[in-house]
Amino acid sequence: MLKKNKTTITLKTNAIIFLPMFFQLLIDMYAKIITLISVKKSLFIVQYLHKERIMIRRAQEKDTKDILNLLVQVDMVHHNGRPDLFKGPATKYTAEQLCSMYSDDSRPIFVFEKDGSVAGYAFCIFVQHTDDNVLTDVKTLYIDDICVDENCRGMHVGKALYDYVLNFARHSGCYNVTLNVWSCNPGAMKFYEKCGLRPQKICMEKLL
Image 1: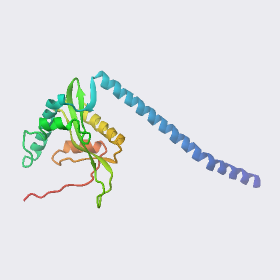
Image 2 (image 1 turned 90 degrees about the vertical axis):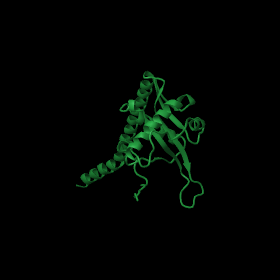
Image 3 (image 1 turned 135 degrees about the horizontal axis):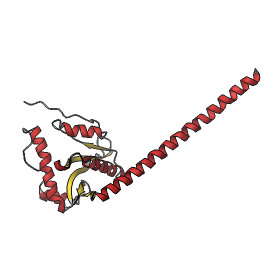
Image 4 (image 1 turned 45 degrees about the vertical axis):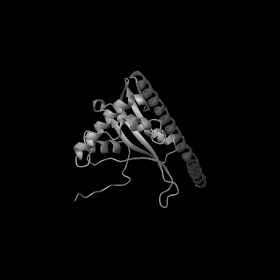
C-alpha cells in the first residue's frame, strides 16, 4: 500500500511539473503557427497588390483631383443623411488647402492607388494633450476622414486603408486610433465595428 501511495504521489508530482511545460509548448507552437500565417498572409497581400498595380502611400499634389472627387462623395453621404447640417455638393477642403497639407507630417494623408487612380483615402491627425489638467498625454492618431470611391466598394479598399493606418499608428508610438462617425451613416458604423472599433464617447443633440 505504501509503495502504491508513493507511485501515486510520484505521478502527481510529475504531472504538476510537466503539465505547465506541456501547455507552454502548446502556446509556443500556437504562436509560431499564427506568426507563419501572418507572414504568409502579408506576402499574399504584397503579391496581390503588386499584381493588381495597387499601393497605399502618402498623398501627393497629383492626387488632388481624385481626392476632391472623393470629398464630394463623402459630403453627399452626409448631406443626404443630414441636409440641415451639410451642404451639398461640397468639399471639406479646397485644392489649395490640400496641397498645403500633403507635406505636413502632423496630419498625414494616405491614398489607395489602383491602376494610377486614387480609389480611397484616409486623412489622419496626430493628437496629444500634454500637461493637461485632466487628460493623460497619450499620443493618438485621429482619423479625420476615410473614404472609398463608390465604384470600388466591396473590393476591401477601406479595410486595407484602415489596416495600413493602424500599422502606421503603432509604428508612430500611438496609444490608440480614434475617429468620429455620424449616426446617419449606418454603413460606416457597421464597417468600423467590424474593424474592432468601439464607442469612446457619444455626441448627442436636441433640435430646437
